[in-house]
Amino acid sequence: MKIRGAIVFFVSLFVVLSPVASDARPRAHDANGNATVIIGKRPPGCPSRYCGCALRLFLGLGSKRLNQAAAWLSFPHSPPKPGAVAVRPHHVMQLVSHVSGDVWIVRDYNSGRGLSRIHPRSVRGFTFVTPAFNNVSLLAQISHVNSYE
Image (cartoon, rainbow, N blue to C red; front, side, top):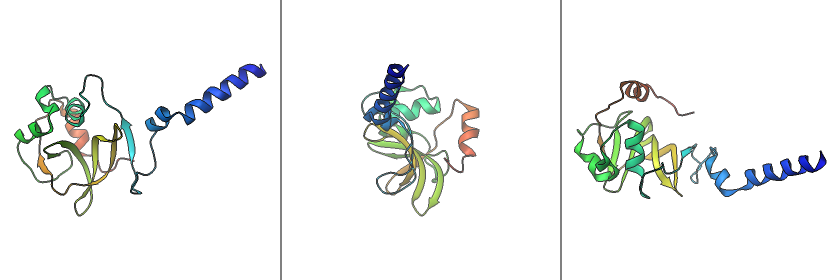
């Protein structure tokens, strides 16, 4: 029994201290001291630069051309609002809720170190679009999100 307990202890210690396991856990704050939640890594089948692909999958949009961030500019432009997508030539992220000024809580796939997060971020310099949704219940869920905690 003592050997089994020691094995469980060391396996648990390895899992807690493992870099992969620690990256998969939600963190209280990012490098800037902002509250953040890690929501995952690159989805299977997405390219290494996966922000467009992961957001496309999350929203239930089928077109693989949306794997390219710039392709999101084909959607109707809109003001910044919850559910809108912020687009730059090489990055996309979805607006969740407004914090203040140009800072929004965003669903940000491939936001750094191969991870995806929900966190506060400036949207200065982004163009905003409203994608066509295939999933009505998802649209309702996005429209009523006020917080990510």
